[in-house]
Length: 181
Ligand SMILES: [Zn+2]
Image (cartoon, rainbow, N blue to C red; front, side):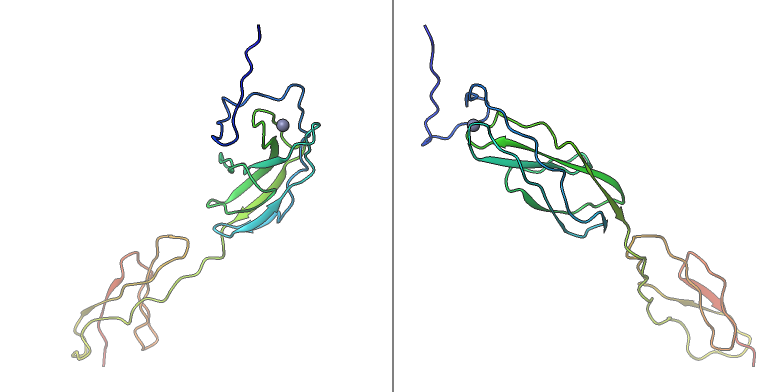
């Protein structure tokens, strides 16, 4: 006696209850192609191709982005964004759309993508706040705020006192000054 498992298309079937097609093999796709150098948070396009089912069934693709994340199964061209700097090795594989348990090996090659931080830029701080009328020789505190590094780095501040002198660089956005007459 043989039990025949039928998976009606109208219901749709999960990967586990769809029987494998006997003797189906899926050939591995090509190594992904696309930019080898990019910056964090930049969306880039990558593609693969070349897989086929020996039974002539349609195939779909998955990418391993090399950062511990796998794409969903689908088209052979995708957008990808890495959020961290580093070198990531992308690869792809394919499966039968009709028989998802029939999968190819991973592509023989990997595409090494170098992801770099963008150049650092610092937004200017606010206009200094503090006394604008002051007797000569009297010290007063001046403050500023609002500067931001696009990379989220800590900042130091320095004040230009307008008379050819400056404060030292300090991690607090405040400094004390007195002007001689
Ligand atoms: Zn198939």
